[in-house]
Length: 217
Length: 291
Image (cartoon, rainbow over all chains, first blue to last red):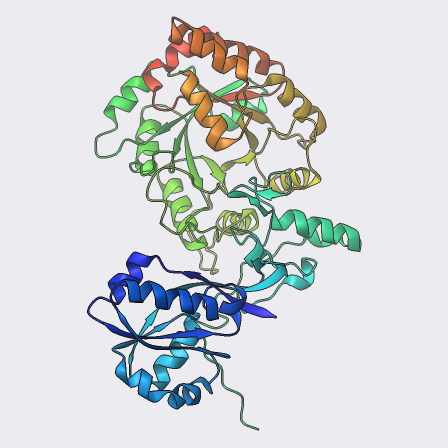
């Protein structure tokens, strides 16, 4: 399961964003942010306390099941009276959730979280970024490990001189992607792939902002 | 004598690294370097340094060349794409520069705003594609160009492994050799035993190895390198010697001279990093009896 990995914004930033907006409705989400403990029911309750202590009026709170789902608009419509009383919605979901809600409700939306990356839970409480959605996948030749994402430098012809006993020069807690690729290819008996020169990537695969339309049948 | 020629003749070469001065004319730099003219086989001008931004490197290379120095344009593939690299190499060629020293470069830990995004779009493989294209007389897009620059290319190699050189590192050196590298420049050497072990384990494919020697002036510099560059890089006894010395300059020169003396038996040259002390370079060369 992929997860949107988020981090709570500093209290000062939330305070600045809510400046002049005294009546606030808080929205959490039951999916990714619950798992990362940044926007589930306990965090929404804590935020409510924090804002009340700061002198704000919290007109209500809710934790929607999946904020990025289009049904979220209908769920929020059900508690419209509480939302109408608020000057702004403080949204404790990832940016996908914030934007889904912003599109459906005519209210100022304030994100309480920063969205870091789309990650995979690789162990209890551990989340790793495994794909950057670059549009030119090469993991068929790198043992199923993506160097564009897992290597800090995104090198497709690795490793660099900063590989340090299986760790990355930027952080001894981060694994060197190319050591992992080497070991994987060695296990698979495909070390010859290491020597394959990866040509410069075509960065025009899908220019940002990405857009995709299903072809007409 | 050109650096390429000196390497081919198996001379023990001496090169040094300086920075193009920022916001002032390079006269002072040229004057300082004149003291060692004829004693260094090359002067490399780096585009990136610990401190961050430097002056016009290619222009300064050209001025040094006019002053009868063998200048080396030292750059990195970090923060550049292939078009920028191609432009820089062609500019360097137009300025009469024959030597390149190119690193894929590290993650920056000090210097100019660390908030800026560092990008590593070009790796050794893509560097090769740029060099190949311009050597054959066309741009990366295939447009013909008048010049066909064929540089002497220097490449970096991580040398602090001792005898436990990983397979990966060996492969990297092999790749560099395929690119057509003219010499390998090591990471700073302080521990000669470890370096000897490294050399005995690596196959340098007949490519000359030049050892980087950093002039340690104070114990603090050693500690900084250990903390930020690589832990254990500068041996404790060196730091102690500098810390206890009454005459720090003398101690610094002794350490330098001993290192160079040892390296003469191990590799084909030294690349001296003065870290802003190029006016003292002559004294260090004297101390180490280099020409």
